[in-house]
Image (tube, rainbow, N blue to C red; front, top):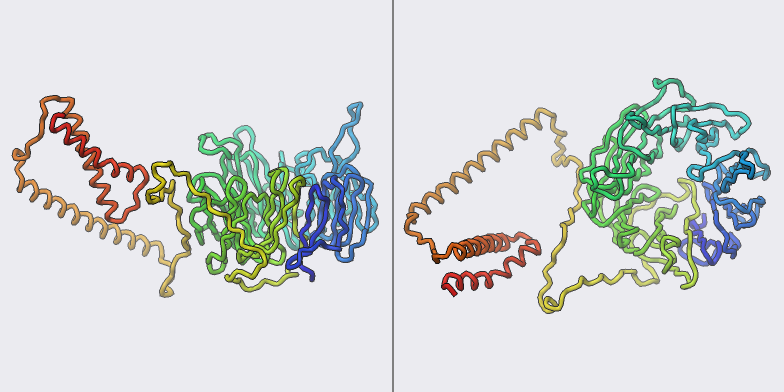
Amino acid sequence: VPPPRPLLRGSEGLYMVNGPPSFTESTAFQRDSGKNCKAVAFSKDGSLFAWCNGEKVNIVNVTNAQLLRSFDLPKAVCLEFSPKNNILATWQAYTAAKDGTAGVPNLQLHDVKTGKCLKSFIQKKMQNWCPCWADDESICARNVNNEVHFFENNNFATIANKLHLQKVNDFVLSPGAQPTKVAVYVPGSKGAPSFVRLYQYPNFGGPQSALANKSFFKADKVTMLWNKKATAVLVIASTEVDKTGASYYGEQTLHYIATNGESAVVQLPKNGPIYDVVWNPNSVEFCAVYGFMPAKATIFNLKCDPVFDFGTGPRNAAYYSPHGHILVLAGFGNLRGQMEVWDVKNYKLISKPVASDSTYFAWCPDGEHIVTATCAPRLRVSNGYKIWHYTGSLLHNYEVPSNEEMWQVSWQPFLDGVFPAKAVKYQAVPSELPSAEPKPAQAYRPPALRNKPVTSSKLHEDEPPQNMKPQSGSGDKPLSKTALKNQRKHEAKKAAKQEAKAEANQESTQCSASQNAPRSAVPTFTSGDPEVDKKIKNLKKKLKAIEQLKEQAAAGKQLEKNQLEKIQKETALLQELEDLELGL
């Protein structure tokens, strides 16, 4: 199998390059140099490729570079193949007729083998324009006026089934083999909650026929994510506005719904937005990136218990490799492009490459390589793409000329199992290119501090990663509830005893101190002027606080910036006190 090829679309045209290790332009696809290539699509197995160049929609066979079909659809802006390559769906913007009557159907389904148009629909919205197929194409579904219509075996003449709920806003079919399951979302209205329901096709009877149901408030929109084995769905529910004013991003909650009827709210230990949630391809765990910056990332199991916590860091996205044995946590967009590549089996950090200004990230289907890209219109300058090995080596770097733009980068897809999983490497693979380590920007230092030693002052301390699995050292079974209760009681008693002991010690030392020095013997200084006395009292208070800070520093505590500044003022304060006491 040739390595997966990157596809590139931009002002230099549409072309493919050979996959790692060569990266030369590929002959499997003749470059289309037009500047109007708006829409592209690969088939699920990567063997067919379709694109619209502003004149026609063309389909080529990528394996032998042969042009299969051309359709006269100059205005097409969206293309998609059905999972088994039988149908190409195309969509163009809907326009109503001049006299106000309905316009022509703008969503078309074409038979790839014959080129015949099988069916056309009116589909006004671009969002969710494409019908959804089960992986074996036995059913195809689309949302029409709050109903989901199902067709069977690509027979679009008759609607085989309808799922009718008061207002179905969105639905997702489960991946994998039969029987197909359907997750549907109905938004709440007039004080009623929103809900997500799971059904097994075609059992759409009353509410009793649902496999599972989860209702919740606080949802203006939801994202539903099936795991690969179709046993559970994660639902990210978000509101447009955060009523508490804590976040720009609105408020998000994460829900778990399983086809066996179980459901739960996933408890995230840090407040703030949920940036990303991804299923491991093994379907038994998922990773969430959440919380105000620096964000936390945690892996949860199917009981929604944390298994491993990656601590905090500058990140807002997570990507599992196709085989699920490597996880990349990254900070793109308004963050600097730091990536952490983790071996998920052993929870060990493999590498930390940096891809600054990236607007796109994708794993290669081979599970070894990664592409990061900087594309317009998100960023208009320094467009291009980089190909990495997950061990941190930069293998290929292409930057477009300064007057050109890159609009899209993607890998040619392959079916699961084409590339076998390989053992995880930690040693960086050799590369011709120098490593892409950007120079760390130096923090601004005012002239007065430039020759002094640097005191590191962080706004926040990053939390370290930690394993959340219950540590069973000597093969002990997890403790029963009563055993846990007793253990806690015992620990609480112990702590209380120690506290009492410490207090007693403290009291006895204080007593002895006060006995040694009778109160009256300590002359309290008075200057005769109550204003000056007040100042002296304040100064003494400040100096006492500085003493305490110095003791803490000596004990090895990391002091904050403002605390260090306080200590620096000590000599000045002592001088001021002396002056006041001398009456200067």
